[in-house]
Image (cartoon, rainbow, N blue to C red; front, side, top):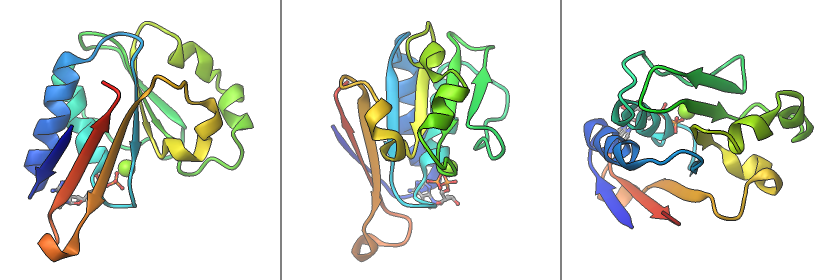
Length: 141
Ligand code: ADP
Ligand code: MG
């Protein structure tokens, strides 16, 4: 699936629609350069899960847990991870193979830990189409 958006609201809306359809046990990998809209997408996704709490990128922790929605959301941002070993230290398997849905910003940095059936979301800019244009590719849903 390919979506094209021209502002933050539209990317939020795509995240929301995917969040509404999310199933327990799914892992959404989110990749794309800094500032491309991964966290905007995540905020929409959380809204789609009926999470009202404000969602931000987990800066000081690798994972942030949101428990109040339709199912738990485990929001990872592994940008600052030094070594995939840190994922074992936080017990990532309990999240990846648990009853909630995982969303992993920068999953390519821990590629070896990502299950093969994970859903891949890539967000890209194309400056020829304007500063706010984003192409969102979703595979494996
Ligand atoms: P990331 O998590 O990928 O580093 P963020 O989601 O934190 O990026 O930030 C994306 C930035 O890009 C925001 O400031 C947002 O307002 C801006 N933006 C502009 N156009 C779009 C768009 N089409 N979709 C998402 N964000 C956009
Ligand atoms: Mg982010």
